[in-house]
Structures are given as structure tokens and as C-alpha cells.
Length: 355
Image (tube, rainbow, N blue to C red; front, side, top):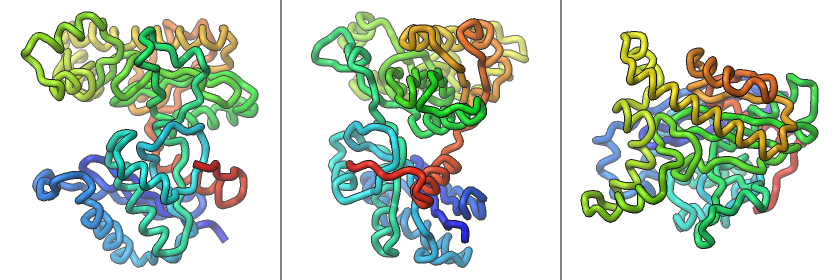
């Protein structure tokens, strides 16, 4: 009998649900939430009952009983830094998410909902490779300012899945090879995978690395500091410039790669220059990861939604294919990643780590 897995993945304005029978997708739905609906809640935690009821209604409408699932799999939230792997959601993790001491994100709410549903139905709830996955080597933690250690915050779920997939394609064990994986989405993370561990990666949320559709990446520190004290911008506005309004948004007023490509196709030379500059920065980060791995790289993999862009990937290939063979595995792959992790737990292939 195949295992039945419920996938829960919350975003700012959507609740995504999927049901898998082993790795076969049976059902998928994305419930959109209008700003009017969400405005009645004073904070994100007040949305718990609202979002949970949406999930339960959807299951009822499609004749699924909560008790019929073998596990619930949820995208990991903001907890303390942990090594990559599978974790059983527990009271301590939920408490850390609710405290917001490691940050706040809609996925935290999704985890709390999943935990409540799992408890009610008596089934395990798992998360795997959360965005706070931390396997950095000791040298990667130095920033140059003692009070500001470099943090690990990136697309760990898709990074790890992509690394496992390419290892299978190469007919090798993930723990035996070195890879560079570049996740190209709204944020961009370029990671050095050394024998199964991500020993270095840029902070893809609001730290460093290439600029992306929404994020500024590494910027000149002195100029940013002076901008903070101009008196023109609040803290919130500066953060928005770095995260949300940076990158393509700052230069071209869009966070859509497709829109930028249309602009280029219509002869916009500035859009072409900006898009090329993003490819340049991604390539430079890949080169940096190659140095971390001492040049011993089995493969470079481009993944995420922007990896569908033949124009962007062509530029990156031209700059980096001298390092190692380049593979493209486009897409975010979140739901199937969550199903794969749940199945590895259910069939005993991978044991859960302790939080």
C-alpha cells in the first residue's frame, strides 16, 4: 500500500495544499487570500484558525479524512540553526516559531497549523531542510566585523533536493561528491556542497551575494551606512531597499524575469545591461564557491524559476563552464521536495534528527 502524504505550504497570500500517494500527486490546490481577507487580522498569528479552516474545508470538499494520512509534510519555518535533514515537528520547535526570536514568516504559521492537525489525527508532522539549515564551515562564519557573524539563510529545501537529484544522475552518492548549486528565484543562493554538506552559501534573504529579482545582495557597506543616516529613510524603508525592493525591482521596477525578457526583446538596452549584470554576479558567486571547494567540483547545477531562462543560463554557462559540467534543473520544486522527504522518513530510508 502506498503512503498517503498531506503537504502544507503557506505563503504570504496563499495556502498551498497537495496530496501524494507515495510520490504520485493525487491532488493539488492553491487557495488565494485577498488583501481584504487578510487585513482583518492584526498579525500573522491571528490567521491560524482562518487558514486551518480553509485547509479542513478543502479536505472535506474532496472527501479526504485527516486520519487517512500517514504523515503531514510542511515547509520548515524560522527555528534555531540546524543541520540539514528531516525533523519531526515538536512542541519546542513550535514554541521557538511562535516566539519570533528567529524571525517571522508565513511558514511558521503553516508549521503551527500542521502540528495542530497532526496532533488531532495522531500522525507525524515532518519538516526537512528548513531555510535556517546551517552546515557552514568555520571560515564561512567570518564577516569582517566581530559582532556580525555570517548567517546561513537560503533555499535549503530545493538546494538539497537538487543536489540529491544530480548525484543520482551522475550515479554517485551525494556524500561522495562536490557540487555548486545556484538557486535562481526571487532570491538567489549559490552554495558549495562538499560531500553532502553545504559548507558555504550566501545569505539569500537580506545578506550578501548576487542581486536578484527582489534583493540587493552585496552592496557597498559605507554607502549603505551613509544612506541610513541621510534622514530620508526609515529603518523599514532601508530594509525594503535591501529585501523586496532591491535587484531587478530597484533597476527596472519589476521582479519578473519574464517581464525583463520582454523588455529586452522590445529593444530595451538598459534592461539587457541589468539582466547581464545579474548573470555576471551569479557567475562571480559560482567562481567563489569553486574556490571554497579548491577547484574540485563534480558539477554545477542551475535551479529555481529563473533557470527556465535560456538567455540567463547561457550567459552563466559562458562564464563558468570551465569549472565543471553545468546542468539545468529548473523550477522551485517545493511540493514534490516535501513529499520526497516525507516518503524517506516513512519508508525508513532516513531517520529524523533531534531538535
